[in-house]
Length: 265
Image 1 (cartoon, rainbow, N blue to C red):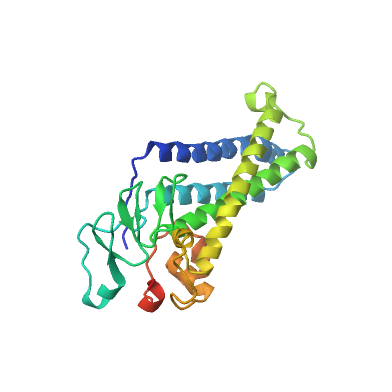
Image 2: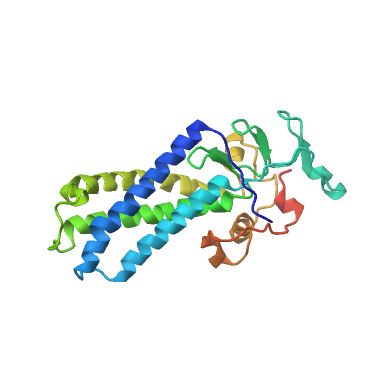
């Protein structure tokens, strides 16, 4: 599957995504400048915490940008339906197009998306079959980065030795306390907000149920056979190699699964 760029024209989505990028930029610039590099130069830290912070920040922003611009599974206007799969397609009552079962019409984007979970304004895109794995990575790395930021803020204020070589002419050091409080506040907001979302996403995948299906109450125990959680996650991430579930620098290839597992009846 090649990379398909998907760009949603939505000012509200641009604003929400801009807030996320601002928080990422603030902490990515502030934490190393005020905490990591000064304590590393004075021998309070090794290079490992510095490298870990930048790796988490890189994985977080890559998963955000890729989740935002990756086609979530938009259906073409005239899809070719194989004869053997016609029983697993249905007509959308909003755009009058044929779509696979478990697809959903996004009123904000104006088209149907395969296995759509929800429309997320924070990435300005739908979360569907082809970018759900990136959205999960975004939640995971945002939690790690927020937790690590809060940990460093706490250690800087209460655990690390006071810095001896500080250039008080720099803005970040003159207003160090205020900036640290802002960083802590944003870290708490991000951690609390993303934790609940990440938990519901994990439960949904384990139960093989999308957020829309939960709200619509259309997935009952008898609707399809229950799959092992490893199978559900492998289908979302496009690979059974669990180490690749954490790598955002790759292309997802859908797994071949039986239709009695893959489709909602």
